[in-house]
Amino acid sequence: MKISRRGLSPRRSSWTAAALLAVSAAAAHAAQITVVTSGAFTAAYKELAPEYERATHNHLLSEFGASMGTTHDAIPMRLERGEAIDVVIMASDALDDLIRQGKVQAGSRVDLVRSRIAMAVKAGARKPDISTVDALKRALLEAKSIAYSDSASGVYLSTVLFPKLGVAEQIKEKSHRIDGTPVGEAVARGDAEIGFQQISELMPVKGIDIAGPLPEGAQKITIFAAGITVSSRQPEAAKALIEWLASPVARRAISKSGLDPVTAR
Image (cartoon, rainbow, N blue to C red; front, top):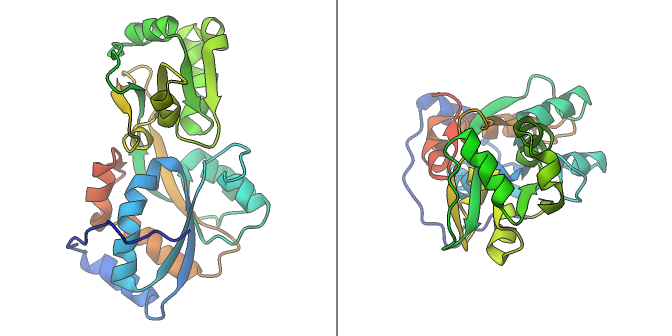
């Protein structure tokens, strides 16, 4: 799926000389780069992709899928069935697994952003207090239904946080994993009273309000990183794209989407 330029207003970008030279060199001959990004980086990527295409004249074929899990679109499943992909952008732990499996080039990983988990409720509904670990625990016990994702944030919640808080058994029957679609959409439909996902995945969803990020002591910061697949047909162009996404030109879109750039470059 190609990212459409329609509806995205051009904006002036200032590149560092190093980033400009790196991308310009790789773009001497226009390349077609296939990218699959997981949900947390999607909003930033959708804003940045048309800008990259305008600047380099390279063409991005863009797809989206979870960092982990067994849904059809999940990045590990795409690589397992041999899809032609150049760049993957996903939770760093899952990316490291793919590197160990020999599906992503060793040494190609570049950390892009830090992501936090937040809680959402249906638009206009009461926002439970989750400002402390004890308040979060009460909110979980009092909620009529709870939704979480099938990717990085949901795995953490269901296997680490809920047991740590001592509520896993009490909330088991009312907790539901949402496979392959944004958790916020389930909350907006009223399928769950509260839902948890990376804040950058909740922000674009209409019909919900964000109650806030998980509090200190319960929060998990996830690094989302990019890597080049071993089967990439455009490894040099893929490397230049990743360097561009990690450069200062991407910071505004990243921050706007609710993510934090990993480092100043």
